[in-house]
Image 1 (spheres, rainbow over the protein chains, first blue to last red):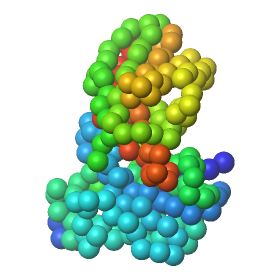
Image 2 (cartoon, chains in turn cyan, red; image 1 turned 180 degrees about the horizontal axis):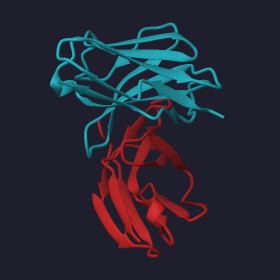
Image 3 (cartoon, each protein chain N blue to C red; image 1 turned 30 degrees about the vertical axis):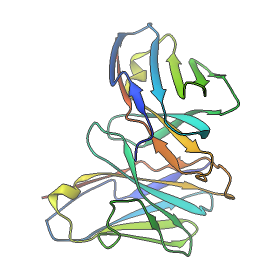
Amino acid sequence: GAVVSQHPSWVICKSGTSVKIECRSLDFQATTMFWYRQFPKQSLMLMATSNEGSKATYEQGVEKDKFLINHASLTLSTLTVTSAHPEDSSFYICSASYGSWSYNEQFFGPGTRLTVL
Amino acid sequence: SQQGEEDPQALSIQEGENATMNCSYKTSINNLQWYRQNSGRGLVHLILIRSNEREKHSGRLRVTLDTSKKSSSLLITASRAADTASYFCATVGGNAGNMLTFGGGTRLMVKP
């Protein structure tokens, strides 16, 4: 149980285009989803936290107009990289959790590798 | 932002040897977790240790936590080539809900 999928697993796009990445919880309802970015040989950096039906909370330094997050349902969150540039090339990972405020495990998706030419 | 540091950044050992990775953090925590990431893949949750626990075991994994020193260690015994991966510690703060803050990671290579 507690499986999280991401689609696509990899994407190559031209500079200036927008790319949408989907994160789905397959067998549970995710009240909270998290989006991380990971550059090669580096750790995961939290970009934003989203709760179903409300606006995402972005970490300092993350442009909310560039990285649009929509958590429209309890099983789906999307991250749209708008007007992508080569420096946006990275590995994007989502995670999902369920339950109340107190700690609940995050279940991670397999990641999406974005390459912007 | 990253909570802590992991040490070493890279570790290369022979199959059968033990691997020890350390993690330090800066603020008070509710719990600390260890994850494994194979190259280009997502994260696999290994073990969680709560702030009131000092040691935890899971198979060949042993995790210790010293809250007075704000540090944790992950020991993998009798390593296998399949253990080759990056290992990350992540903390959940006392008042941060379930938000994870990751350390820099240790890249482990186990040579057959």
